[in-house]
Image 1 (cartoon, rainbow, N blue to C red):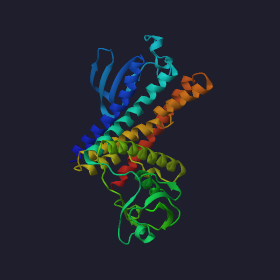
Image 2: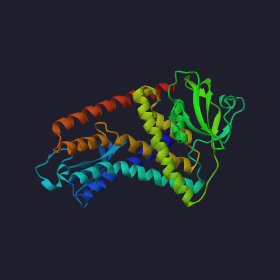
Image 3: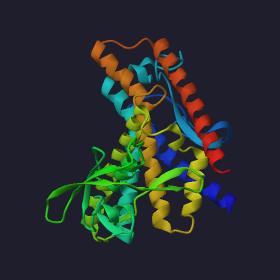
Image 4: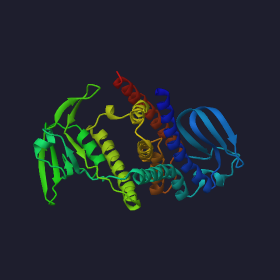
Length: 349
């Protein structure tokens, strides 16, 4: 069973990476940039094919990434290539499109998949409307009722269920959580909720509130389109809150998951059907796109940041300085990935 899960995870990551790198590839090709290779995976080459366009299409040993190797990504680096075919010599807007194309592709893939999920099985509202309440739970004791829409938790606006879950997960120095809700009559009311303290399977103490989401189903093309875009926005909002909470210390690094954590997600979703499988791809595709657009060295967003600085100052950045930033950023990312993976493994025991 574990082998099937690993293969599914590899398949999911391969699809997401292929879509991302294809975005860079197709725009670089469209803009006339010289491309050395298009590779899926990292490490030694297992399979290679030289296309009629002169590009090497490779499959590498480790399915943990992929890349498009282009001439002059930062500066002119090959005397055999015509100057006009270096990426660094292309117009500013073309370079920007090449850099963000991978992220755009990831987001498009996610929206398309979310649309088909809703079309196949129906969609639910993304609004944090209380659908069920457990008897004698913290929510029941507070006075919150079924049908109430949660507007904010501890001052954090909860425009969706995804964002609400992050707001509940954030560190809270007080015993109670402040819920601002919109009642059925349109009025707003504030409640103090004292959650029950329970331990999860890893022995970590968590808060139990005792309420569930509104699962009313909506069908049709219009409802599915609406759901796809609102769910996309909802997931991105929750990721923004997660990142800001990490920097402010409201969420610890231990909450992040790496490859082992992704394996557990895929494993727990086995047998839940096509919709769940498609949702995992959509969610991880948004995740990859969101992380890549962050203005951090080694990410696409880091390169875009240097382009914005270039535009502001009116001249290109020093190539050596930019390369040094990306190298340091990459090393820091590897250290973070090793730390997260070790934490994931420790959670298994």
